[in-house]
Image 1 (cartoon, rainbow, N blue to C red):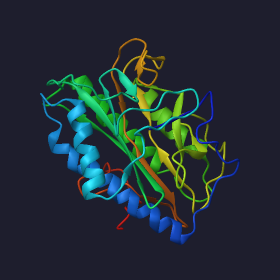
Image 2 (image 1 turned 90 degrees about the vertical axis):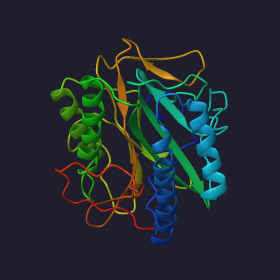
Image 3 (image 1 turned 45 degrees about the vertical axis):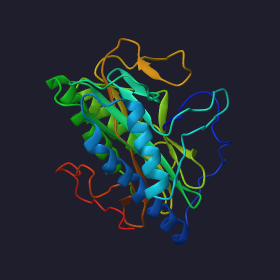
Length: 287
């Protein structure tokens, strides 16, 4: 669940960026792996005819009864919002993020983002994936694939001494080179004991700007790319964000640790799609 890049504060953010100790990192590795396992579990159920309410029920049951964790989005209430009513976010086609599960069946050709956040022993893990329901148009497949590459281009910038602006620049330049637009009102975020913490991780920007990365930082990278214009609006439910021009939107997300030599992807699980071929420094959590 991305934090707004503009507007009100979520979770009374700290003014400084927390550098996690090795003990704290191990707690984040555990919850990161559970988060990935939840998405692995849901994957075979994403088929034409299933409702997002059913996916939500499956997710909540698996989270509590199998993983022994808590669904962070359920009843989550940042300032100015009603409590979020479900355990996962399901954003379909032109929905950008925070789509609320309902009783409408998924149909062949839909693309859907499933965004999950778990709490285990007080630690938060956050990840999302795109799913193609049955088969989809070439344009829809292209959008999902390019957004995944954009995520990993951002991840590849992560190392001590780099800047948050390097991440945003890598994502923005790649997206715009391929005719896609970057949603700017929502961003990645620090995560740990808090669901949303500093720093803000913008998916656009200039290299060499914003905070310098240090080992021990943990944050999400979660670009939202639109096939059309970047403009968005909020629906009347107070949560669901859609593209103003009703163009397709896609998002992928991982939780990332800055290590002394690069990065570690805390939410990369056995069933997750592999990194693109250009990725060289990949390391996944083994908790």
